[in-house]
Length: 191
Image 1 (spheres, one colour):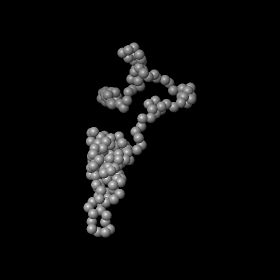
Image 2 (image 1 turned 120 degrees about the horizontal axis):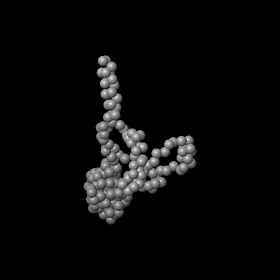
Image 3 (image 1 turned 90 degrees about the horizontal axis):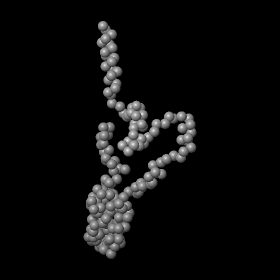
Image 4 (image 1 turned 60 degrees about the vertical axis):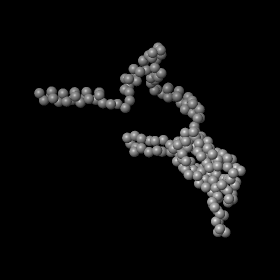
C-alpha cells in the first residue's frame, strides 16, 4: 500500500515538467517548422543540416558575411550633430568694446568693458531652430556645432565687431537612449 502514494507523487512530479516555461522552441518544434508549407505552397525559409567535418571544412573556405556588406555603411557621423530636444548654449565675443554684446564702459582705465555675451541655454524646437539676438532664428537641426558657429558669425557680420561664436551642446537628448528593465533602475544614457 505504501508504494501507491510514492508512485503517485513521482507521476505528479514528472508530469509537472511538461508545463514549465521554456526559453525557446523545443527541438521537435524546430524540426516540424522546417517541414511546414506556407500559404503560397513554399516551404519554410530554413533547413536543418547535420554538422559534420565536411560541412565545417566547406564553411571555412566560404568568405564571412557581414551586415556591413549586406546593408552598406549608413552609420551616423562620429561628430555629434544637433537634434530636436537638445539644449544648446551660445557664447559670442566681439573684438572691441562698444559693440552689440559689449558691456558699458567703466571709468576705470584698466577695464574696456565686457566684450562677450552668453545666450541662455535653449532647447532646439521641433522646427530645428534656436534664437540668437541680432541674428534671428538659426536652423541648427542636423548640423555640427562648428557649422552653426560659422552660420551665426555670418549673420552677425556687419552688426557686431568681428564676432566670434562658440556653440556647445549642453544636454544631447537626441543622442541618448533610455534603458529600463528588471535589472536596471532606468536611466538616460548617451549613445
